[in-house]
Length: 170
Image (cartoon, rainbow, N blue to C red; front, side):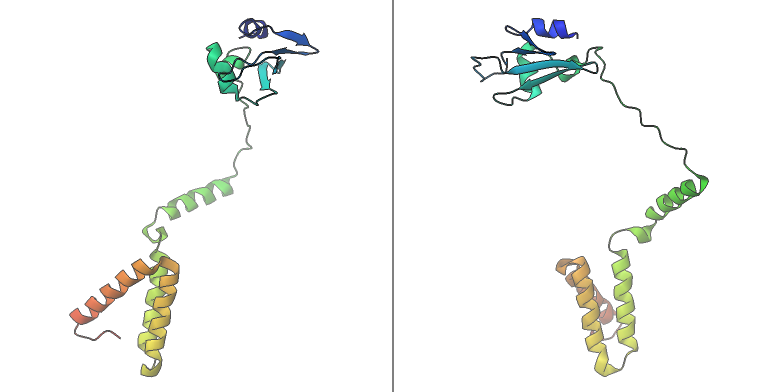
C-alpha cells in the first residue's frame, strides 16, 4: 500500500513537516484533534497515536487493514542474516553434543540416581556404626536434588527390594 492510499482511508489527514497527522480511527477513541502521526520511512508506513497510545492493530482494524499493509511494496522486508561458514571442528562438536543429548543417561534424574547409588555403595562398605549415617546422607542429597516425592518413592522401592532379597532395610 502506498502512503497516499493509506492517507485516503483516514479522516482529514494534514501534512506536518515530513509526516502527516489525522484523527485516530481506533474504536473507543473519540478524537477531537488529530492525534495520529503517520510517516513513511524505509518503505514502511509508520503510525503512532499520541493521545491514547493506541496499538497499531487497533488503528488499522477499523480501516480494514493489517500490519502487512503498512509495507509500501506489500511485502515485509526480512533481514537476511549471513552466517560465517561453520568450521569442521565446530560442526563435529555440534554433532557430538546432539548425539550425547539423545543418550538415555542424559535424561533428567539419571545422573542423580547414579550419585545415590554411589552413596549407598559407600554406606554398604562402611563400618556398621557409619553405615546408617552415610545412607541417610545419600538419601537426603537425592531428595534435595530430585524432590521429596521421588525420593520417598525410591526409598520405598529400595525397602521392597531389600525384603525380597531376604535382608532388612537399614
